[in-house]
Image (cartoon, rainbow, N blue to C red; front, side, top):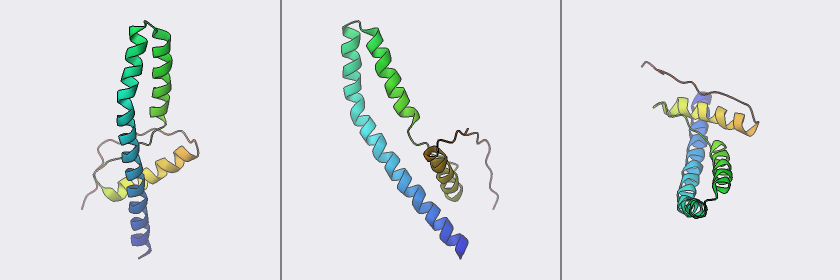
Length: 105
């Protein structure tokens, strides 16, 4: 019973983080159009240095965005995503290297 409750809580945290990530993506898409106009203005002015600064800032923001694991197994996804979230909160460096995950039934 305890494992089931833990699994449900992990799933709930995963869903909450997924919803939050989806909302962030919507905001980013909304902002992209404005960013393109800004970059176009800098390009029309020949201001390459401002374009570089602008892009470096945006890349930095994207690097801080949440990433999610999608293995096809919701329980594993929940556990891994929770661990990744905690590591990001604590500024712990990590590398995602998931290849050929197989969970037999």
